[in-house]
Length: 320
Image (cartoon, rainbow, N blue to C red; front, top):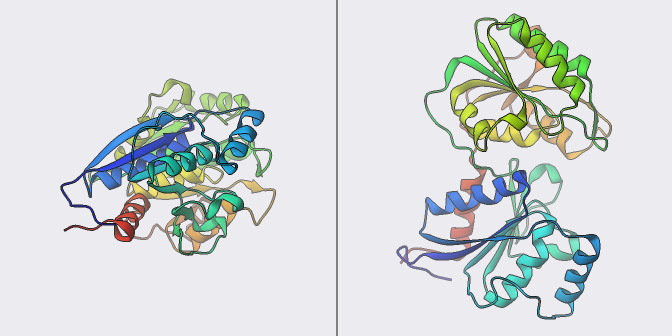
């Protein structure tokens, strides 16, 4: 497929309302916009009930005509992330003739129906004709100059009963250790939707006695706040359960440290991802940092959204 560099690609972007999924999708779209003109149409899918989703699958596999906002439109690309976008995307592909691109790993029955799946290598899926492996999920963060070496950020995840044990006592130890050893820095701490109330209360008590530490509850931060923090803070510490923020900070060009959690399954994808990053020297762990046995290494910022965009253009589109 050949398109002139001056002829915009028509792109249908499917958004399911999940901030993490939408960052992956929009990261690739933003990177594509930097390489080629686009005409972007956003389509909101939202979350459907199990019955509605099952009915959508039945209609798709039976070839029935599913109503869609894209019914009369032809697209070059159909892009989205998250299971709730998959059937609407593939239905749009049938109607528009566009190429379908998704992040993360679709269910096995759908995987071969996508033209390209940009899948983090920690998912344990092999690269293939329509599988492009990434170092963590693509995101909207960009490397920028001007990080302040005297500013540091701590990002807290929280409870996830399936993957790990959350310990407020450990969080207390991490925060007190970081701000005591690196007392010359101005520290910013933020919670997340998964951070339990007892941890929030604990952090607020710690901060109350310190002049160089500021705490923000996630619900009091605006959209784009964390990206602004990546641009300002040279050092970013993230709890290991929040790997998406680890990759965002690495993409922003920050030096990144990981605050450990107790994994329930040592072979889960987040633990595999943490191990890979430590082995590659892209991050350091809090215990090694505290003991003085680890130092941040110089490396290029990640830009997985850019790699995905370049792969899309390389495979199907080229300049005249």
